[in-house]
Amino acid sequence: MKNRDSAVRPLPDVGIDATAGASGRLDWVGMEGIALPVCFDAGGGEVQRVAATVDTFVNLVHAQQRGIHMSRLYLLADAHLGGKPVDAASLERLLRAFLHSHEGIADRACIRLRFDVLVRRAALRSDNHGWRAYPVRLEASLSEHGFRFELGTDVVYSSTCPASAALSRQLIQHQFAEAFPPGASLDHVGVTAWLGSEQGIVATPHAQRSTARLRVRPAPDASLPLIVLLDRVEQALGTAVQTAVKREDEQAFALANGGNLMFCEDAARRIQQSLESDPHIAGFNVRVAHHESLHAHDAVAHARGGAQEHVLSASPIEALPW
Image (cartoon, rainbow, N blue to C red; front, side, top):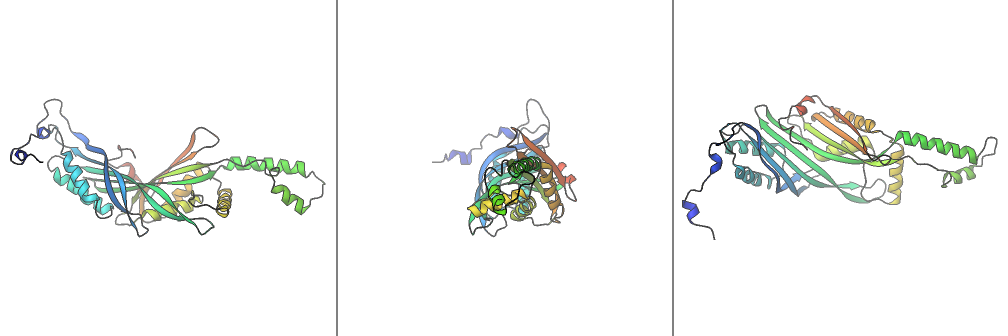
C-alpha cells in the first residue's frame, strides 16, 4: 500500500541542489542498458515487437547544476518507444521531449537503441525458407546542429581467399600433370572421373565467415528500410550466409564462393560502390572483417562514402561507441 504521506509531503531532491564540490559542464549524462520493448518495421510489411537495449543522454550546461532528472528520461523513453514503430521521426520527437523535460538544464540530447530483427530469407536453389537475425543499431541526436539519425547493422557472409585459390589451382595442375603425363592419351571419361575424386582435387582454398558492419546516415526526408539496405549489400557481396540448406543449395553456395573470390579490400570496395549509388544515403561507414581460417587474427578494411560522408565524423555522439 502506498504511503499517503508521500502525496502531501514534499520529498527531498538533492539532484537540483548546487554542487558543493567540483563544478563544471558535462558533455553527456544519462543511462545505459535500459531494457524496453520496441516496435520496428524492417520494411517487409510486418511490424515486430522486439526487446531493445536503450541508452539515453542529455548534456549538463550549468557548471553548478548537480545532476539531471534521469527518471524523466526513462519515463519518456518508455512512453514513446512502446507504441508505434520506431523511426527517425519518432526518435526526433522523443529527443525534443527529453530537452523539454530538462529545459534550462540541457540543450543537447541523444539516444541509442540496439536490438535484433528476424528476416525471412529464401534458399538459393530449393523452395525452402528460413529466418536470419540481423542486429539493428539506431542512433539519434538533437543539438544546435539540428537532428541527426543513423542506422547500423551487420551483414555476415562467406569470403574465399583469392591467393589461396590460386595456390590450390597450382597444386591441382601439378597433380593433373602427374596423373596424366605429357604424351599420354586423355580419355574424357577417365579425366572426368579423376576430377571428381579426392585425388583430383588435392587442395581447396580457405574460406571464412566474414562480417560487414554498416553505419548509414539516410538522406534528408529519405526512406531507407532495413531490408533494402541488407539486400543491396548482400547482392554486392554475393555470398551472404544461408538459412535452410539442402544439397542443391550448398552446391550453389560453393559455386557462388568460387565466383566471388575476395580479399577484405575487395569486399569493402564492393559495398562502397553499391552504397555510393544509392540516392537515399547521405553518408556511410563500413568496417569489413574476415575472420581468417588461416590465421588467428582478422583481416580488416574500412571504407566510407556518400555525398555527405563528413557528417558521420562530425556527430556529437561519436564518442559513444557502437
